Image (cartoon, rainbow, N blue to C red; front, side, top):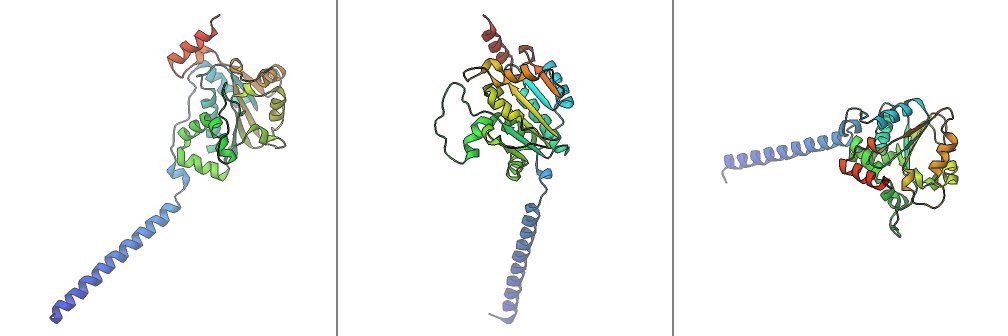
Length: 252
């Protein structure tokens, strides 16, 4: 090969190596930057949720002015969703450090039997409605990050015994399925700067005997710092068909 041809070949090889090296450096730098993206830049952002029924307006007012709130009423009224949104907004505004979500591990008239996996995986089916609400607010990836960091923690009722929950919002769903003894244990976990929001429908109780939710409301309704909000079928926002079903089951 003539000298000029060999020189040209070396030049082309060196030029190709520079391009490849430069591409690797650029890719490496881009990957490094992506590893350290702030979570707030990747999550979904929404406007604050607005109350769209009289029941939700009453719940909103109760959350703002009380530390213990009972939201009682039929399915489809948005008790769980609205409570979760207000808790998420408090976390975003750094008015609290943590959100706890819990509910009794009671199936609605059926048994799922043994569920495989770790404790949180076994508990997953029970907290799905709250998880769905938070994923809508934060986005799935950011919600998973908050779970991993412990900023949002799902904890079964039985695992709350002995705990003091403070500087947080605690969301208890399906509270009609707690016994009075369990409800007393749960409510006495409240610590400084904590807000407890207790949701349930006494008419959909799946346990024998008196509901702990009903018992707690009777004992605490007129105590200072306690708000009780009763939703009716007029507050159903899920779907018109849901309201028809609720009305049909309330008929004698």
